[in-house]
Image 1 (cartoon, rainbow, N blue to C red):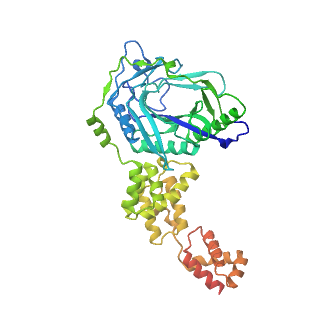
Image 2: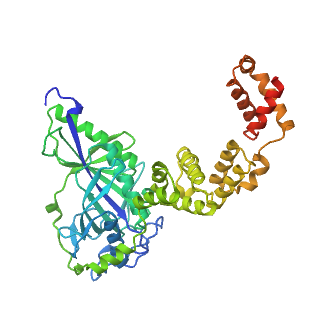
Image 3: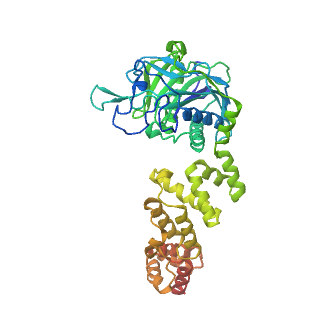
Length: 476
């Protein structure tokens, strides 16, 4: 491909996602799951694989995994078993991990992403987590915390259907939303409840065979996953153009430097010496069991989006935004029912709340405003007790501190008295000589600038109509 440019190559990517299931205890023992517990305080002989200990499958974990697979449109296998995946690492005290190899409990699913494209899912299988290595910031020592050992995970593996970093981002956000809706996991990446690895290769555009696959690990956010995919694509293109050979390997993403670096050569399945787990019997899943689990799945994002548009008369855009996050969807529905005014509620959440969340980098779980307080805020605006500008300030304080809007009225209430507005109007006229001259020359639009001056002086509390009347009177 001498002389070819970057655009001559096509990205081919797949994503492996480990999702922590929302159980109270571990996958094969009764140890509690408690994030932030002191290191090595939640581990038992089963977690550590001590002689004589036997694993017992957590039924709730298996049913949550079934629910996840069904929510992802997967086929459920009628017969499944567990296998031992053998490898040696400091955070794996048994020197093997109980996972699934050739007979996973589900296969052949898909997710539709924002662009409308379907990303295929090869399989979703159940396995236990390993422990955690904690490395010194300054120094060469590492410490092992085995609290996480044995926590139930469902691993979801896509087909190599992803062609851009945007598609990868869309897939990951759609996956998280579906799993949160289904009640399978909270998917809190800061707590390690959702972890992604990306498999990346390139090929000349328009050709059939895939290139050599490189796995990129250590992706602790969707933003990092997208950046790592873009970097690795560029790195492979440059290497091929320089005549270098891409080798199958595992690389780590260095977020600070914005590069990937080699971790180890990529293992093949035979390297793990899989064999059936002798201490766990196989599982048969009949249609009645699948039907019971399917019936337990709550309304998923696509169905909720369609219902919001039909039941509440929302635009497709608003319905999509409101249904994207389950907590926001629940907030909207509660406020819409309380107020009987779904469209104003949607406007406040889609426009103002999303703006606040983005600016302050907040999650819905951190919002202190309630559906009842938003309903009251809308009422105060509609009855003329708050201006639009004051209402936005009030809403911001509601979100941050949870203060009821009535408690803020004294400082935010609309000023409708002409006498109280006159001082601000005179100040706006004095400061806006050009706008005054333009208005007197017949340019009506110039009055808006003066009204803006009044609003600024009164911190958005002046009634715009009264402000206009006062200004016209003073300028006549």
